[in-house]
Image (cartoon, rainbow, N blue to C red):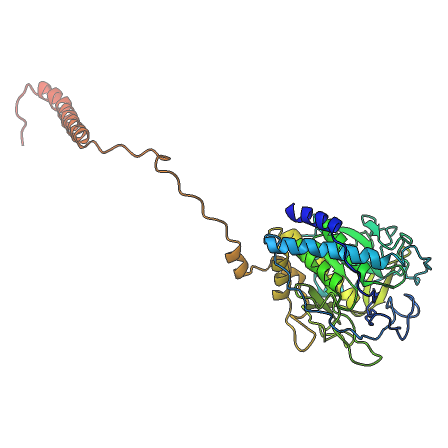
Length: 455
């Protein structure tokens, strides 16, 4: 509560000079060129490709040191830093995004299909076995992307927020696909289901045409954290920028798990750079893998990777109440991990974001080589594994000892009474024996006239 009050006060009090606004693309290969640079090519989603934005050059140089986020909300220093972070992110985002808000947008996503088969990723991750333990109920996942088609029958429970001031629809299809992978509801006769089908979804639309502002992306992350999202999925690549870094720090301080796409290889010059926010410390960075669990060639190995997830020939929901079976890239690998995080948070609500991230990494199948991290994510182990370190850290407190007068002491032993009781019992036994003998001998003596018997 104190942290949220500090956020409000500092937002009202701070006046930050907005940095240069750079391009952001919400695709499998997002634009990360420096401010003022012109991308080599820009294409709308669905123009003969499964990617939502065309490949752009990456001249991404780090603009400053990466902030080391705090693990929890308990430290006052983290709270104060988070407040300043939110203030900066909001101020720069509003200033940077104002020029493009409300611009006309062509809303024409590529057509999908209505006939799909079972996803290999769903089989690979053994999701039906995990659903016997949890389906993510009670967990909220924010999808920072291009919006979600809430008319899709498997995504009708999605709450939508539009920061672009354009149209409420998903005009690309990318955000709808990401949301479906995370939490598409189960439907009879449909072989595709999201990883955490009972999780709640919040769609925060930060782009309407596949490109956007880093400032607006930062604002979307802050907004998601303020709305209490347990998981924030960011299938976006951008350059390192102060407001984006601050927004991620704020979200982590609010105990959200931030899951981000590690980015794809930029094929124009063959020299990929790190993708942000995936490269920030504390973020669960996701690379793409194929059915064999090996990192896809297109998955960026420069960005630090936490785990791998399915990112080739991926099936998911699509704009227009349809589906796609040919999605590819780390943009669609990240939501698989976001769904797994939702399952873990539902099963283990006592864990903070640091321990949730650590659990997902420790239970992965094992990586090999650059860009593989801990290997393919393993939902069943992530949900059910018993980690000794967690048991020690989360051991319940020992109960306080009872006060001395809580139990009445036993009375002292009365040896005299016991002795008397024993003698009385013995005497009673002797008397009973004599009475018995007399009862037998006297009648016999009387019959014999008290004469002695013969031998």
